Image (tube, rainbow, N blue to C red):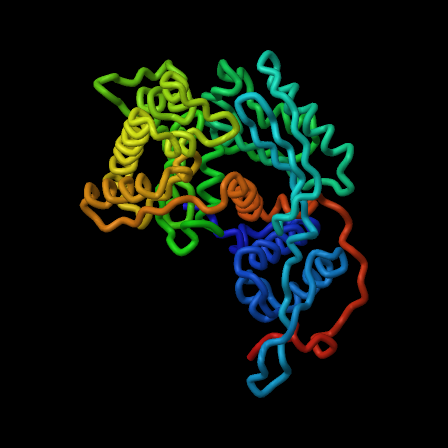
Length: 407
């Protein structure tokens, strides 16, 4: 189970450590639960009102927390609501594509402050990442609290990349360690489809459900599994590699970077098949180009893609019993008739009730997923390195009625 960021950990010993623990707990509670009163914040974090008072005052003095209104009176003094200012914290997001890197600095409120695009040097991809991040940080007006890297492939919890089609061969060392050493910042690396699924679950097509299977069709075909609102990563962090499902009696091989299903029905494979029958997608989606073509062979390709993608969804849904299957990437460009056919195939084949939906946020979902990863680690949100306790005048409970114990 993922630890609740609002639950206090084992009691720290030093004054600085205790202060950091209180800050982390308060930030985690405000990020995950939204605006709340001082009394509620104290109850949720488990700290006494008096000990939480200094923490709140420090967060407000540094511009992270503000008062945003008052609760309705229940007969006594009305309590003031506190809210974390998500715009006060920025992170660096790196999205790795087949040939290019996109590097952005964005606030936890989703606002993009700076964005650059750089080519990916396949001979030295790590150097490409470092140079792109350094370029962005040179022009950014504010320092980022961490770097989040979104990449296709298999990434361990420690940031070790074991399968990275865009990088070629597996990296010999931890990419997260290399980026930490180069940038001096905490680094989070995650599979791009996992981040996209998090974003769609939080603010997109699956925002009203907690158990979701997302099928992504891009240069490959992958799935992300969100169970109970948490991404399921598997024992080796590689859950969701449905592109390796067998197709047309072709069995997958573990030492191959491309699986049988995606070798035939990924967006890249579809583009190649479309060009073979004289349809050049150009800047358009290949599904949009095929759907607009009067050539009956184009219709056959769309039908084939629908059959293949529904097969992947049915296998996933039968195993996991999600409330919804969300199709993302190239699949959102299916013509209406093909969308209806895809939905019908999945609903009719899965023995339990399941909804079929299509992603709403596009690539923007990755940014929402990156913010969610940071939100789950409130220690990274603030600079919690040990430093002297801020000096402040003593205040009695009577001087701060909301800090007084409730009884």
